[in-house]
Amino acid sequence: MAATPPPDRNLEQFKLAVSLVPEMELKGKNMWYTSMNGNMYTYMGKEGILGIRLGKEDYHAFREKYGVGDLKSYGAVMREYVPIPEELFDDIETLKIWMEKCQAYARTLPPKPTKK
Image (cartoon, rainbow, N blue to C red; front, side, top):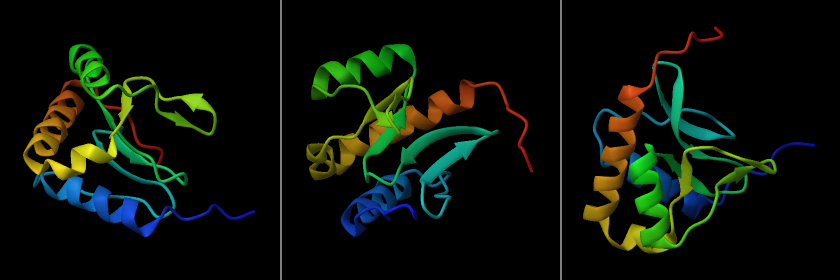
């Protein structure tokens, strides 16, 4: 059974979020993501839910500010990831700040060898 592609609107929102930070590059086909040194740090799965990876302090601050829960993929909780609420796309300046925090956290992660 083929994966259902995410809704076009969600993909456009994801592309917008990634475009806010020039160093980010969107990758993938059915599961969209960004990565650095082998570590994924943004994500949009087949469900169309957008998520960003944050350090502990920012993770808790984001969850509290936006009242979001865990980001799940295929029923599993994605540790360190938070779902981006729809309301954040109405405030591009704040979205950019969170995307920059996400990328800054990715820079702190130890490199992972790629499987290719």
